[in-house]
Length: 173
Image 1: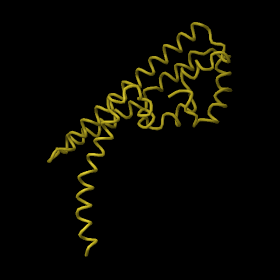
Image 2 (image 1 turned 90 degrees about the vertical axis):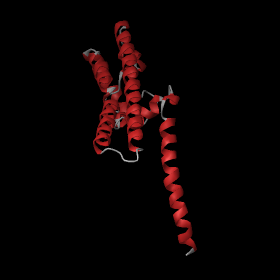
Image 3 (image 1 turned 30 degrees about the vertical axis):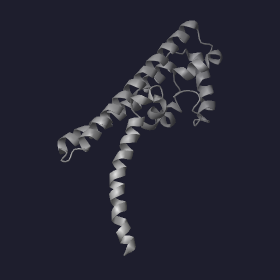
Image 4 (image 1 turned 180 degrees about the horizontal axis):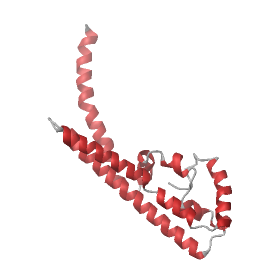
């Protein structure tokens, strides 16, 4: 009997605290994070680091291997531009995803949420997360395409070493 007396207040506390804890988590992943977009990107990019980047490292990785790949000054300039574009695209998609989550959270908190609006919010979050997952893919492919045939052969050999240690997060995002 005494246990039942504690269950109801505990359940009420849980229902009261859980939304606040979620809101705090979302707020911490919002604009206050500033430059720390990378962990958010990794967590919301549909497995990009392990699924795609592990097999197709991008322009930052190419620049890190400039000497072995014998990059020309023009190629270094191109890979740097690709890196900057890639980072900008990733940051932009993360910002959009955070905004879509915030909108969904606001609509979901309504006393009588509209099914069509909630459905639209969930679809918008899904599309935004897909965009995060795709943000870096074109830049990674362009980084490889910018190499000549000899460099691509060296890249593939180096990539074999890289992919054997795909969990190493030091090379790029």
